Image (cartoon, rainbow, N blue to C red):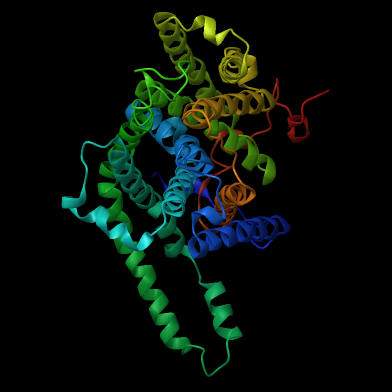
Length: 436
């Protein structure tokens, strides 16, 4: 995962005002999770037999895993195309993916219920190998594990270099009767550091195999997320139901992955008052339009082949959502064809936000908005459903804010071009707000 000095911890207090605001939102969301497991899914959800997949699956799994594909997309660029100049971005992208995929799996457990029966998943005789849903579940679980292993070097580096000041403060705060012996504590912590020093070089030797897995698994399950809707030929609107769904979902996750890596970098630099990593981001931005051109070409070509161009231009409810997704991705990508725009923090932010919104709307359209099980069925997420989803998103943001202060995740500002004052189209922080 690179040299130790390639990344750095963010200095600052963990328990800030934003920490407690996010923690409150997380608490509200998890309160409703508790209600769901105590009183059943009907107590918190508006889902039904017609709409068995609500906002939890639509956002947390189908859309959230695409937004969490920053690690996957950047890994392809770094390790497949050998563009090592983007390596400083990989660790923060992996951290984002780790939280995104881990909490997507958690949301599935909230949706399904009965977590005590999850052991059946590990019994081969219970498997349904012909199911796209089984393949998605298997790959998401495996990829979440791979992401944790890929992030381990950051944790091991911290353990190697820490002085355990916080641990000693906790010991001093405890009552003498329950506080561990100072000498025993110091010895135990030293053994932990030695263990980290022993494990880290050995992990680095085999890490490339986990990186290969980390590229293979999302390729499989992102296409399978599209395959899940192939069977719904009479329920999914013709604007989105196509045999190209697996391919469209795979390409979609790649350009969303690059765009979210740009957004994450700009937002974290803005929030933490760090210099922008414009050199690396402009390179990522140059790739996005070509990926989206492929995606848009497949969409238009498929519509023309199936005779659905008229439906796309009909300007009704479904056409409106389709055109919104299409133009968000198209216009956002067109901005990035300009080299000047790719070197502007403001335009990088605007274009990446449009692409993420458009790509996410495409998945919402496929899984929820364009899905119609027939007459008499209606669905709109309940307040509790929305708050559970918001709570999960807040937990991702909270986890990211804490981890970048505990572990060396962000690129070392002193080692990269982003640390130097930028001119010629690179706006200062205040200019991220669009001019009226």
